[in-house]
Image (cartoon, rainbow, N blue to C red; front, side, top):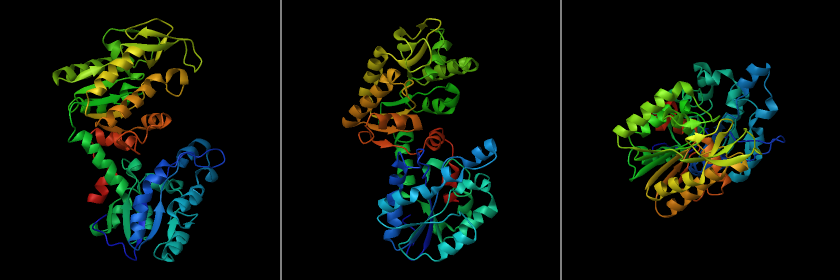
Length: 401
């Protein structure tokens, strides 16, 4: 934003205020709002007025499913009071996103005032990056700043379409967006070695591009979660009723072969905590991951795997964590994921750089109370994944062109 003159300008800022709300519409985790405050304050300190836009949830998806939108559930008006407290000033709410009311309220703004627009996704035109809708957003402001890294992989009107209506000197990235890219680049472009990637989650199919890219740049890849059993099955292991994507067995072997060719060590869990059913209170025991009995399924990495993975992490200088080691939502099967969080915090304290990205990994590090003990926690799940896969993010391209 250094090149932008903000004084006496109306600034449209796209943020990611897609925060969880409880049944009483109270915010249960305000991390994303807090992470946007430095950018908003930066602009206000330079004599501008703010017009903030964001999405909240997926109301259009609900409309398609139910034939209606629950306006109350998805309204950004629930954010107003908390945002006002964080900014230390009144936030005015506009019940429209674009149109006459939004234009009138934006025109009346004076320097230092803040206007929050209604949920951009109340309009189907948002996800279509509709030119007319984008133009209606443009007329509200003199300057555009995108600080919503969490939606930078979406080609939407408020993240991409509107940017084309501003000149280069009238648009830029916010501080959060800058920080996200700089920290991701520490992993992608200049990792201190050894570089270890911890990749978990349920399905190999969700992480194919990421694994393929990481094999080209990492020294070690630790694979946990349900996806580990597809790799174990590909090697001829007996995995019982564990999750397995049979259509991806050949691909798993190809990834393992590519890793060997690139001198990348793939680490799979030697043992697992297995259960007789997918249930928080299921019977459980420790099993060799390659010899899981029929009727049993792996729901977490075992004690030997935890120790082996910790040894790799202790020797690492750069670490990426994307995806849990097991079904950590179930307390009984959370030990592997929680141990990973603690090990990451420990090696970070010893000087390693650690990047946590992906919704479940972020939830896990926060559940462990260690969000402040690692180097960087990304606000973008899909966006970070897309960036790490080597693809250009539409939200970034729109600012640079």
